[in-house]
Image (tube, rainbow, N blue to C red):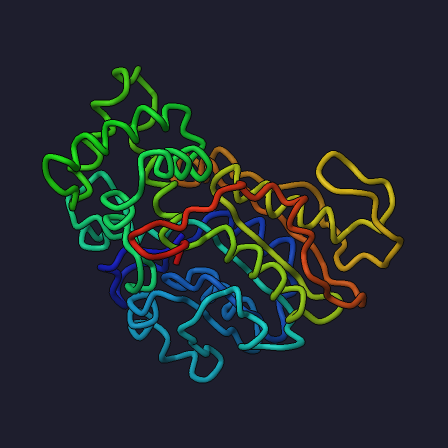
Length: 337
């Protein structure tokens, strides 16, 4: 997760989630790496300091790349910045030693009210990582009630999705919903009072809207496929996820790729024998007590690691990845990002 927008050259370097176990696993660090979710550059900076010959940092958010100017200078051409999507990683580098994807929304975005990602500070209901396309306000004010409920349930695993969607539709008939606190208050009023220790009632709904606005799950699958194409044999794939939907997709993708075929399961049919595209590197890594204490946002993080083989890359078997079965094309004009 990235640093805040107020980071300056005199600030201490930001330490992203699960950096210590990541570096321990992939050391010694060498060659060219692709950081597909550059953010505030925490992983990229750590890889450069650990010995990477070059890091190609990719981010769709132009603000993230602009902020890198505060610290990137001393690294010269060892750090190459690209504004783009990680679903096209193989356009930016081929035969690379490693790919790292930190899927969490960055602190830089959460801490800036004008970006509209957080319900903790009032700002425009936006959530667009690229600052272009359909916004969260477009969805909230334009989607049909049933469609809105589907988005909240599928992308946020919100059990009260229908109740929340009904309340949103009632309130938007009175006045358009255009700010984060306005939406958060509507969601909170639709649910029973939270008990001590529970997360904010709007947490799952805001997650769902952010995923819908940015097309994050489809982008994740494209990014995993692109990483397979970009990596050289023996190269590392490292993915940090922050909620169960993302982690399920990453886990099943790597299971597919590590399989030699046959077997079959309730998620996918029996497959012809083939060479595995990845070798799994242990089980998912979770933050230890020290990291959870240092960064409460790390509590749900999972790091999965795998190494590329010489087998040819191939498209993912999407039916077996656990992607939510939802078509959220609406009259406000878009499907995801």
